[in-house]
Image 1 (cartoon, helix red, strand yellow):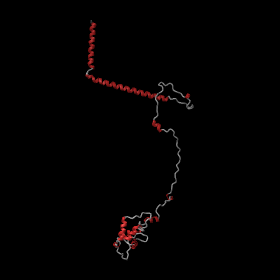
Image 2 (tube, helix red, strand yellow):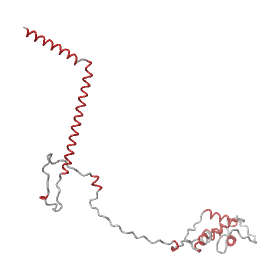
Image 3 (cartoon, helix red, strand yellow):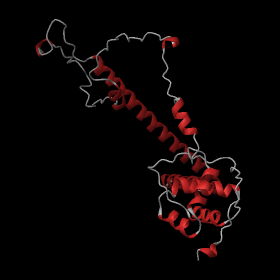
Image 4 (tube, one colour):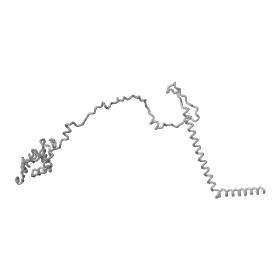
Length: 251
């Protein structure tokens, strides 16, 4: 009987303790504590993962160093094709690495594959030239060419040039031949046109027959032009009185 009572008291105490523990764990005030614990556990897990990764990198780095140190070295007295003279390290605990190391493409591109030293050849320098020894060729115009260029345009026209007359020139000649006292400049231009452009032409023959006579044309040329055919600055004065031209005599 005592054992049963003792057992019932134990069960009651256990239920009481578990009930209070349940209330303590799932109380609202405990939610913040559980969140903090969860965050701390995540932080610890991440740090452990980083630490493990760092250890793996360090281990791989150490393995690469060991592999470089324990590369087979050929003796200088033996040819490189003699494989029996090459000693290999067989006491490596980690084993041979499977990592293939490639050279930097930028460094390979910049490194010359076949380069030979270039010989420096002396450059022959030309001797200095004295400015006084240089002969300058004069490419100017001669005196004859200057006189030809400075000559008046209406003096002696080139026969190769076009001697076509404009309507104003023909009209000026007709006005001078029809006028009793023409303007001096018009008369000089008309004489120059007759001498240089109307010699032995049908137009001059027509003007001579219909508007004037040969004597008046000769007198106009003598008064306005010199012996070489150049126009004068002023028209020569004549003592003879010119006969009045009347067009009605020819119409």
